[in-house]
Image (cartoon, rainbow, N blue to C red; front, side):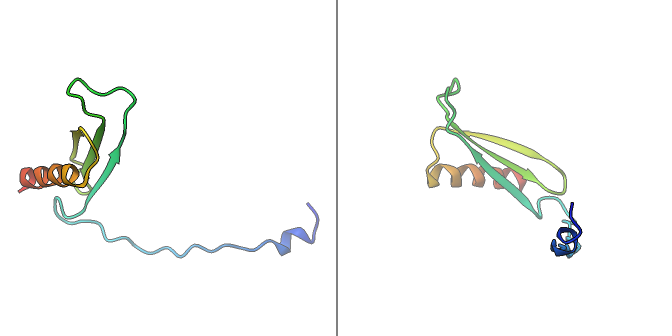
Length: 84
């Protein structure tokens, strides 16, 4: 490396901010949708929704026949009813 290149490269600084972690179960819930799968399941489902809790690491998988808004919403409401 040349002596000019080294000082010319910008130095990147990262500002580290403490993240507030959840203090009780199901305070922070993450979800992700996967699909369509190339081969449907035995129940003709081609999509799935993964829902997991950040505090307890509880994970739930919901198999769905399609990715329409009503189907996804009903799956999440089933998860929320289970939690309550």
